[in-house]
Image 1 (cartoon, rainbow, N blue to C red):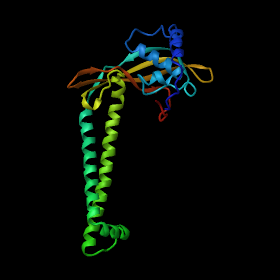
Image 2: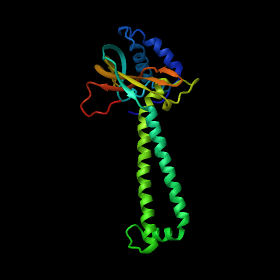
Image 3: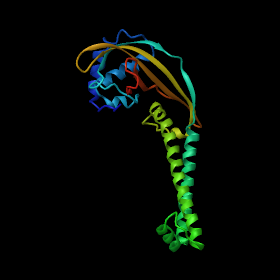
Image 4: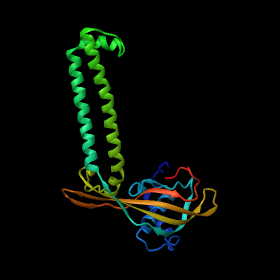
Length: 247
């Protein structure tokens, strides 16, 4: 789902005060404050606030706004290892291989400039003889290796970015920036079930059940352990038909 445009933070503060009576029926669960903030910021289209603790939003113009909610279930926490350091190393190693190949290919081109020009003009499938045939084989082999290495670099970058995105949000501290690639640790997840009253964009209200995923990072590194904040990473409407795009 598209993230929402920021609004003035003063509006959020005022709205939080206004909405306290609406959410007063919620349990005293530890999850209530972040959900209260999430639904309020979504209603105000306050992307600035959401960027601090959520990777999703509830679009008031397309999905409506939550006017009240209650937490009905919180699952047991699930934990899985984070492999940030090994993913960062795999990315660095792939880039180093790619750089080394580019250097080797450029050296080869300079040492065989005229032959390389003939080979490139003739193409991969041309039947060449003698030294040109050798240059042809070497040149196109290095090109193929380059394509594979580029894919390897891209894949390593994607895996690192996927794992680090939520972790960065969970441990973000502007006063003390953290290089998460230097840490390992655990990713903690839990599912929160919420019964909510939703005001549709057309003004009608209806009950909805949401399944909300919360995650946080527990990092371990040479400079000590870091406990991250909870981040909302997924929002699913239980009433949505199968295949419907959700946050």
